[in-house]
Length: 309
Image 1 (tube, rainbow, N blue to C red):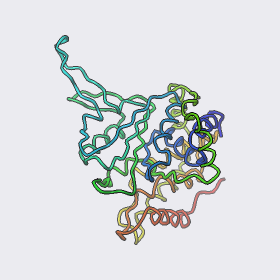
Image 2 (tube, rainbow, N blue to C red):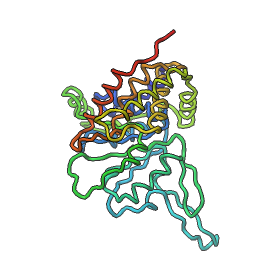
Image 3 (cartoon, helix red, strand yellow):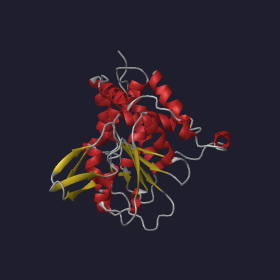
Image 4 (cartoon, helix red, strand yellow):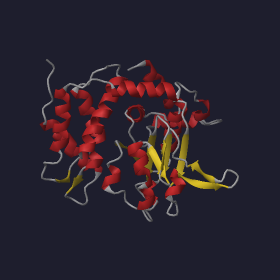
């Protein structure tokens, strides 16, 4: 692991106790310029995780509480007429941040949910026919509460597919929870978190991750994995071509975190379990994300990886 990755993960780890794998996953997605769907119970640190990463990379962060009355313009911004200037001036919305926390995204209407689509896919916002570029790096961390589902709107398949990774933080173990209690007796660790790298320098890390070399055999392997999810009899809808692209981007980011400028089949295998399950719909309407993960595991077991020459 690179020194920068260790420093960022160490800094975030002072805020989120006992979750090194989850912290590594978020860092991987941030390097890959992807987005994360966090589905977990309240109080496990979803918002703190996002704020800690923003502080570590010297970036800005905004939290948007999604509610039934939230409008698309509340997210993207609005043009307001300036009488002194005699023209409309664009007032940016909270989406103009390096990390955007879309809290309880499934409580807003589908129209408002869709306002994030252009932002997440294109890195830009179009208001009144004028396009405004979002800052880089840019990542949306959307949260969903799996309980208390009254008054919620399920995310459509097209929007779930925009998220590179679906992640659960889960409860900490007893030792980590005790450390959390002791560390927060007099203050919040987030206030002590210092910037590890500037957002501009971190963008250079993103560019380096994109430049990781991928042999054609490894690319073919990723394609075979994704296509195999579409051919199983228990699968109604398999992973999309966008999933193939995002799988390779995430795998390249992991290789960069490991200090390599080349992609290995193991990178692809590891990230497949994070990138693919939430994109798979099974014929069984009662199937869970764990059932989809089992499909991915079977695909990994039956799809041969290329061997080193």
